Image (tube, rainbow, N blue to C red; front, side, top):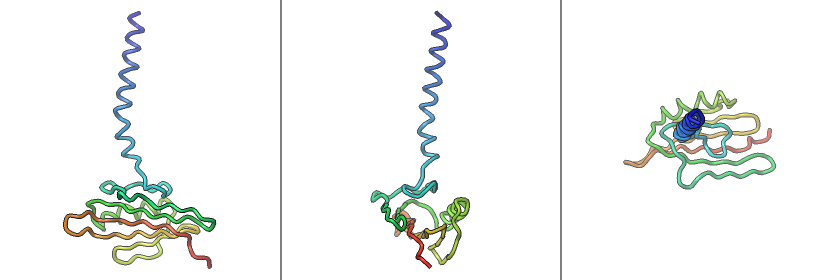
Amino acid sequence: MNLRRTRFRHTIAALAITLMALPGLAHALDYVEGFDALPLMPGLAPSAAGSLIFDKPDGRILEAVLIGQVSASDTFSYYEPTLRSLGWEAVDESGAERHYRRGVENLQLLYQEGAGTAPAQLILRLNPAPAN
């Protein structure tokens, strides 16, 4: 009987430890809504407006606005290698804007500095690439 109680207590303790770890795991696995496997940069959060997701026969149209107290250089330093590892090829870079292409899709990242104490915004737009 004592052995059963000990095993039961150990099982409950292990379950409690696992459940306490879940919120931390969930935060580590945050992704930008609608964007395949694109992680959410630490310091950024989705805006209250949420993402625009529209599927159409010739491709997806997505837009997400992320907000946070992050710099443009930190933002692009985070997303450039991440996007490359996901198969995106850089096609244009100008100031606070970056353009990428993967297959039949174009991705635009537009960084906008916040005014005063307002957070910065990172706007991600995914559109079908124009037909050649």
